[in-house]
Length: 637
Image 1 (cartoon, rainbow, N blue to C red):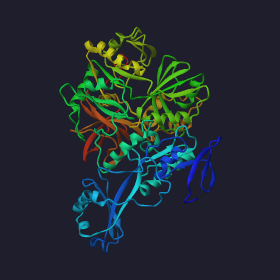
Image 2: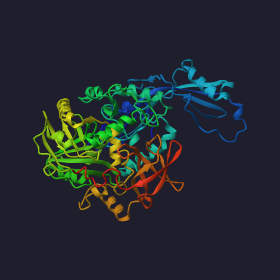
Image 3: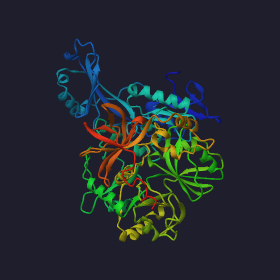
Image 4: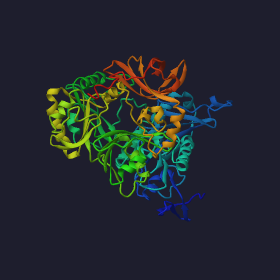
């Protein structure tokens, strides 16, 4: 180890190793880890990447000795005062008190000085006095002693406040472990998962919330400079499950963004792309009060759900992740990367993807447009995550893999009238016999050249229509015109969550994560064990032989005015046995629903549990069959 050594450049070798050029000579390294803290941006620039990381000035005070602490043989616990937005901990016989002020100051917005070492920044206690005074009022003992020292120093944040950890797509053997705000608190865990990742090819647990791949190209320096101060100012504020933070919005907009807003859309951001959450009727403000309980949107989401089940609904799917895989070797490569049977031309398949440990890293759909051309669709937030995985699987020279996030946009049309609506716009025969479930074709829908699939996420008869962005607005107009007499309504992501849970459908990053296996999730039935080789096959076969230890289930919950959010404890006979992964109110079955995992031995239909919702224990009953259309007759009608 060389301390006080300035890295001048990072030069990759053909074998994937690195020459690390320093002011003390050149070091040859098999791997490079960017854990450069305040200089993480600069170490990123050396390999051609822009990491979304920025430093903020941060103040804290150290008090003189407190009489109340004299004679204690144990330190007081670290304390966070959320109401006062103050934190404190014992420092010798005094107290360290700090605050995250609402108007924080960015430090070194463009470049971190090379000669900055252990210096502190100029104090600005007067500016922060009103915030520290809150702490003195809430902790009166502090107001009775003086201030021994004021400290102002920079430390780094990512736009959402979580660390940036993991490998970087397109840069071999280059890893990041930066934006670690709480160094001593988080450093050990980050070191553990990163060492596992480097040595074993897997971090050993789900770390999606701090994976560097959660940010895409949208996380530009301008985006980061707006989101980091927003996060800093909210460090001690709870974010409500229905709350959408406003900074750097909107950044990515689809061609129908303004039309959807005019239709009453209340927008959220997914991978920085604006998408409709729900639609406010005419005369109703397109806003929502942040709350843990049912909001004013509840009745409007219910109307959207019921309209989809009764007639037909339109949902924009542009925010989905989309990938094109083509080339002579595409089928063979996909057969190795995915655990499913690769569909034949004109067919769609559900496509789980596993890591070598047999854990779920993708729950996608795969459409075979031709023997050498495929469209893969998945969660929008996971675009960079999945692209990194695809390229790590080393596509051969005759296989092209690329993101279609900005080259394909589309809509989901769902409900019993969806076939009649689309048949008005296409010459393709959509009759049940001619266009069966999971069929795909390239055709024209109105003016738009499109990829049309018979699929969806609502449990109703449904279709997805994909076209290029330059046709999307025209396609939107055509769909509205064709659906006017058929009861067409807009619906958003909230309604989609309700509809999917009524059918027992799962969602990636909520119900499917890299902590879970095919047997636990129910995805085992989509795994083609007859294939001789695919990533994760040995682990999946071992689990199949031994049996899954836990199982994904849907609960009917005795909730009153609030649904589960995620991560609530599931109790059985007073003992925690699992936790919730997602939930919503099932507006068409009249039940509050929760999804989660419980031990396999307890996963019986009708089994009774309890779930803690906002401090109240609510009864929860397992329903192994979907509460809505359990035979799937409407889906296949």
